[in-house]
Length: 409
Image (tube, rainbow, N blue to C red):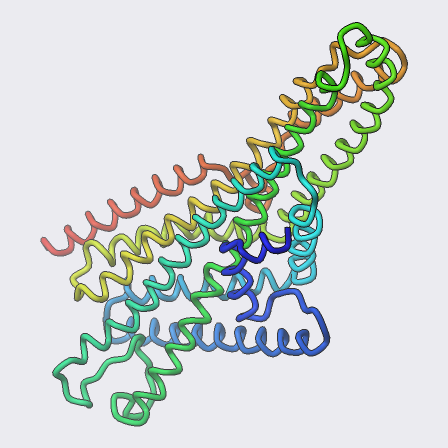
């Protein structure tokens, strides 16, 4: 199982990015010191980028520059800083979630059908994580290529940087230009990683949680399955003897159900504020990305940045709403698995009656679905994705009409 985990591309990428910002499991004291240094390094870059982009926003307003472009950048940078602050506030709980999943979801013996469900979860995670990561990498490359193309054929005094920086220095001249360009490149990488890596690991945790509910549903449905173990002539006697064993298995499955519910609550406790922030901001961000990528009078290289941003943001939004929707759907379907158990063949002795009563309790509890909420205001599901896209389209239409009216006047 460990070998399969090491080959899971979604976890390989998530582990690499989380280690690069200093938020991963420390195996020893030396690695723990390294993680602390990396988290300080990441927070410094996030704060530096926020200050830099805020100064750019101030001077852009003062000199009447492209305010929408700078607003888009400041929202993106600020989202990364907010995410890392939220996760840092729940650092121990966040690490414990990953440890719990490794121990209780992945390093467990499963039968053939349960392994199929787990593999299906891994494939889904790999698709989402790779898609979002590729879009993030393309956006970074586009940010770096844009000034290179813009500087072609220009004098050194006219060179531009990936981001405007307002200093009383000749920033377009060597060696200041090369130093600042390198610093912005490193800064951009750290910001990009903090922007999507927490969503990637959330996707993995939530999809595997939904997978565990699927496995639990399967186990409940096979709770009283003894058709291959007995002959028809001694069925009644064997069922009576097995009733106590089935009830023990039921108690084990109920404990597992309780553990999954507790895990869902812990996951929500860590991510609920982050989900709320994304739900509130994403409609505005998608609107601004669409404007900068499709309508803004800008060079193609710069527009490509926001096309990648637009595709990546929609993919990221779909990823975490799909993950949340899966938890809702499969936690409710545990009731179907409990009802599908062959409880009708159980004898009406004490273990048989207790088994029936407890299955009813499982069905009742499953009707209260597990869900991940935006700070407990509302549950997040694929319906949330539709509403955010609808709101973003409305904002985009209003912005386009406003700019067209200004151009006519």
